[in-house]
Length: 272
Image (tube, rainbow, N blue to C red; front, side, top):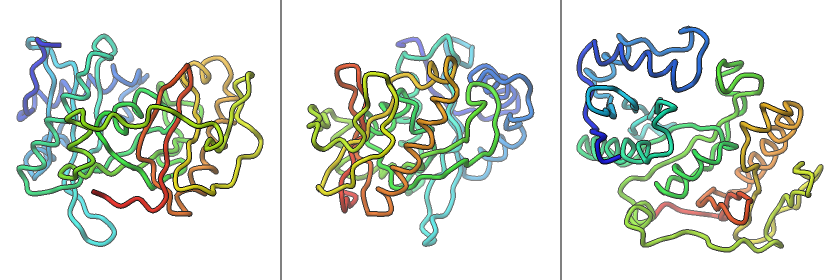
């Protein structure tokens, strides 16, 4: 990873390379879902952030977003996409891109970045929630409708996470001062999963200041081999997270422990 350089993408040729990288990263069959280069260049020239990760002269990763508004009128940076070429995934490039994005947004005087991701994708959860210190209290069912590539065949449900980039919570996570949760007490798990790997038909009602929600370790493998089970997981977690967020719980950590994966949720969490 030491030979990877992160730098802004500022010209049409660079944006065209991002078009192809989108196809490669998400295994798209065509370019109908691709954000075109001219839009990416417009983002860059109008207050957006467009950063590339380069192995030599080759573009192998990117992140892009733009200035947006919260419902209360507060300005934020809306991070729209981040993609890494499959040959370069798992090397920490995503972390470096997000940290560079954080620095660029701080230089604009903003303190909040939001983005969406599939809550059942454990690699994304580990990066977004555990490593970067983002939190989530918003669940969006089927955000993009029917989509293609590696995400085809299921409702496109998403977490919308908040990355409060100047908060103590984020600073501590990034500095390694807050390692997060290390143990998951079984009595606090709301959806204990059986040996068959299926979610329970019902889940416990929350009654404590913190709870845990279990998700599959490898959702893509489930999708590939048992799409009905993947749909069951999608609808199960949709109901569970929707109910918890409505009761003022917030996702604040992600734990991968003993071949199991969990989100931690805290009641009444405030940014700090």
